[in-house]
Length: 476
Image 1 (cartoon, rainbow, N blue to C red):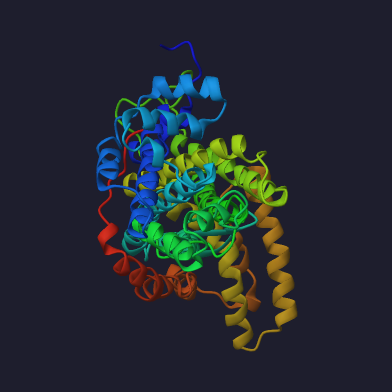
Image 2 (cartoon, helix red, strand yellow):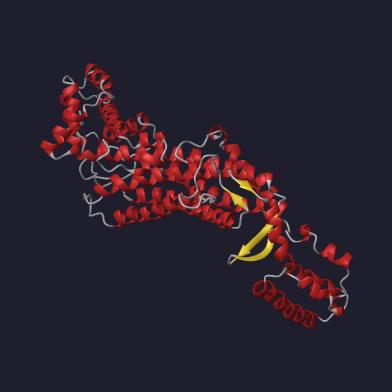
């Protein structure tokens, strides 16, 4: 059927892997695994739950009757209880002990944490591969000179590789924040309706140690080292804000890089991948629009702005719980992950398949080099006894003339010819050739690139070597 809205993040952009993490199958099977972990731990701590009941629950983790669950939810107006009843029908022996002592947030919030953890692990793989792709690109082009720009006006040259290190450094900063949030992500645990654990204290006849042990046992079964120390009914929604801020940071880095490449594409210095049968414009057949980078910027804007949802939600929670977070979080959290997944996939594709044009860069350098060389010419003339202020004025005056020739008349930049006619500079053809050696203008750019790759990017890539080799996926 195509008569209903389809989320383009799923139909056009995000990977199957990320879509699965936020799918109904993943969500509701995780609910069931959490109910099993609860029952197993309660049994191990002495509650009258049988191994037969738990075995029955284990046999029905994946076979979720969605039609029946929908019927129950329509009747009960409660999604968790709808699935409790659906699971109970599949497990009649275990039905009396499913969800024992728990509140809805036991399955809902803990599953959200698990989804965000697994989603961050996918994002980490992509991020590491983006850094590795940029490192390879920077290494290959570390000596290729190109104009640098401040205010998008021509400035002293850099190298293509050095520029790529700026992009890579941003992503490495994002990786550091991602690792921090992963390391500090805790399960909610099982704290009951207002976070006091009262229902579990009643189940265990006032045994506080067993109530505390229950949480640590569930955390271990679900792959976590600890649960949150305290909570209301839900875990603090600041956790969502922290995680979505990591994704927004990645989006900022990606958008900055993609915008740079769009500017370079306009100057014909860089092309993103363009397939043999790809059409750049429905009207202008010759065009090669940077559509991948434009998509990165577009999706990044969405992720950056969606992160504010999490901040607003964290700020507006009432006392121990309110439900004005639920509908928003069902959309903002999954879609932020799906969009970031697509963004990084595109970034990897562009860097691995993109192409630079050094000859075009040489042309742009030659057009601007006379202006940049004037500083070196000034220093050389001063070192031979010239008056710095008079020489500076001569360069300023002649630069205006040369700029007028370029801008008003479309002529070549003749600043150097004008300066050669000024005796105070003492320029000769030989000294001019030496002055115009491009290696004198890129500073330490090649060395900085090598140092960055060795001391910063290299250790990050080596530490995460097991995540390398990820190929760019479909929908790029």
